[in-house]
Length: 244
Ligand SMILES: [Fe+2]
Ligand SMILES: [Fe+2]
Image (cartoon, rainbow, N blue to C red):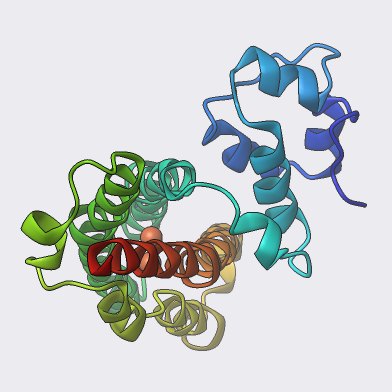
């Protein structure tokens, strides 16, 4: 069932509690009372249409309305994507790190295997951090600058962005998929860490990794299928104006 504006926000969470993280990225916190999605969005000054599209793509993986999503400004998408990055680096990754460390501290055997898991996860964290830094320092500022330039026709781009010799095509080419490494990490636990006594702890780490993978998948789709086409459109518009 798709999430609609007339549904009570509390019922949305009862229906799919995984959406809580997504909802928090809009600055919306618990304590909805009986307010509907529309009322909560109005109270928090959140764009209702954008909220519904993002929440529904997360809620139903088969729902990904390209056209509808591409109509939003890059800055709106980027604000959401940045909050998502923050969630990975400041919440999810530290949580999984603590869980792995707890396992190491509390398990007297198979320590080598656990250190292997810890090293693998550390490498993964470094790769994810590099990936995110590249987007935050290069790609997003470029998209925001294009949007700003188009909104302020007076100052066109020859000076800044065109000289920077950068195009969203570069990002499209080397935007690697950060989820596939998580698959290997999950497999280390699923296939190679036999430790029945600690299965509850392993299960919960595995559960966290599946959750992170799902979130990264949705995030990567928004970058590839929504942000890139929006930026491509802005690039052609700018090129068109410069040529005039
Ligand atoms: Fe990203
Ligand atoms: Fe990315």
